[in-house]
Amino acid sequence: MDNMFNSSEFSNSTKRRLPICFCLDTSGSMMGNPIKLLNMGLQNFVSSIKANDDTRSATDIAIITFGSSVEIVMPFGKLNKDKGLPEITAGTTMTPIGEGILTALEILNARKAGYKDLGIKYYQPWLVVITDGAPQGPNALTNMELAIKACNELEDEDKLVIFNIGVGDGADYDCLKRLSKKRAEPISVGTTEFGRLFEFLGSSSSSVVSSGMSDDALYNISTEPEGESVGVDDFFNFLDD
Image (cartoon, rainbow, N blue to C red; front, side, top):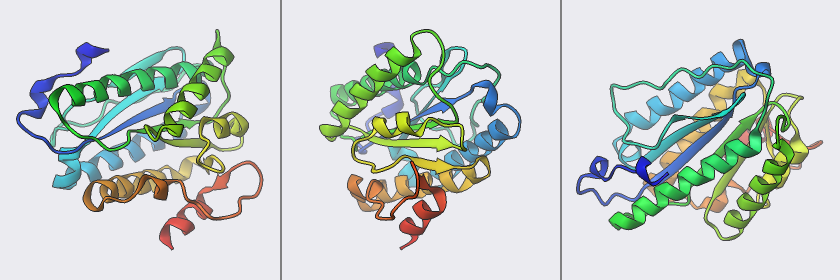
């Protein structure tokens, strides 16, 4: 993964960075309108980042998808004002969530190593996992357990902020909950709420970069959830308070 870091993109900048890796489900259940709305949400998120000089120069974004295989759709790199995001497609029944997360952690570690080599400071990296299913495929459960262990260790050491997000009723919220020990419950969204979700992620990244919002603020949701997840309305009501 080391060859994915290009020092020339930083020039002489010592701006503190916020690396964000999206790890996205592209299994068959995401086909049609869900993947269309997910693409729209991502496009709006990146547009909001590009529109602000502070966040554009500080935020590093990568996108990984997991379906029939795990793919690095967009590696970390400098955001270009004129360059759009690649189109994300869905079309398989496999859901290798754990393998996708492990790959995301690899490229985040490579990014951090590159920062350190150049003497660039960085905020706690973000891992944003969005899935509407449960681990499926060869070695899916084994890889999921490895991913949970790795995420828990990094989170315990304050080296990772995790957004564990389930889509609809088909997501394995028990599994998602285990990804984060700091977040009381995973976040639950409907596909029609992707826009609001990415709007929140965009505004939060701006707050971290511009005003130094603490990482704990991204976890401290004080609502009492019903069931196995924090509903998106409760999530946003808390953030609006």
